[in-house]
Image (cartoon, rainbow over all chains, first blue to last red):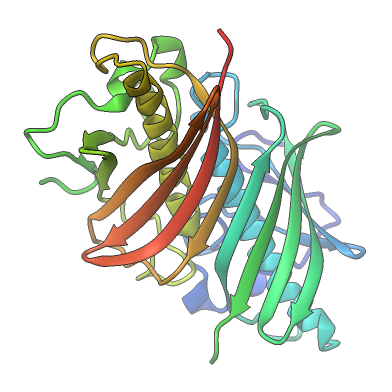
Length: 162
Length: 162
């Protein structure tokens, strides 16, 4: 477990973001080709998606000991978008490493901040697909530090037409 | 006008964020003491608040030519929080440079992404106070690139008890 990078268990392979097309891999939050980005990685864990991440020390809120709320929204956005794309593939019965990840954009995001999120702590995002209807996917995302859920989000994604 | 830093007109002084207490100035988005942060600056423009900002080139979305949605949410959060604090002072008839900025936290944020926001473009955030009720302030924020509004947000802030 190294500080300042994302955390993934060694038995976790096939991160959603590793299968984005090259021309869609420049996202600051999750693009594998954005060298200055966060490069978060999301995986299936049964019916839920999971992403573990240890933010760099400069992502503080107003106070030095609290995680930046904008980063929380950013992580939810990227983890949710990856979940939407992976869910769309799964719906079609296609394994993630065998298909081409569809491209989704965020239509809207609602984040409720329930409690301050500490810094210097590995956080865990969990996504749950609430609805898939045509090109629209709604994902609920929670963010926990330790066992405590500090924020919840509902995000609506729309698949781009090719 | 220099790239990679925030933009403020020379006649704009007294940014909201310049008056945050030192122990509340570490925010990645708007803290003047966060050297690795964005250090956005917000000002009154009549009844509205305004913030102009030129993001660094690595804040891309999936595609290289589109601004990162997580950054949009982050800017709305910081600009909205500054607006809430300044509005609370203004409600009490206190000038920003003569009072102590109250501390607000984000309770919830709803962002609607209406159109892709281009990169390499100065963006303008405008805030409008929708409601002040005790310790709660609701702020509507729009984000425009050129003349086009690309995203709208509604954010609820709560003032911390001292």
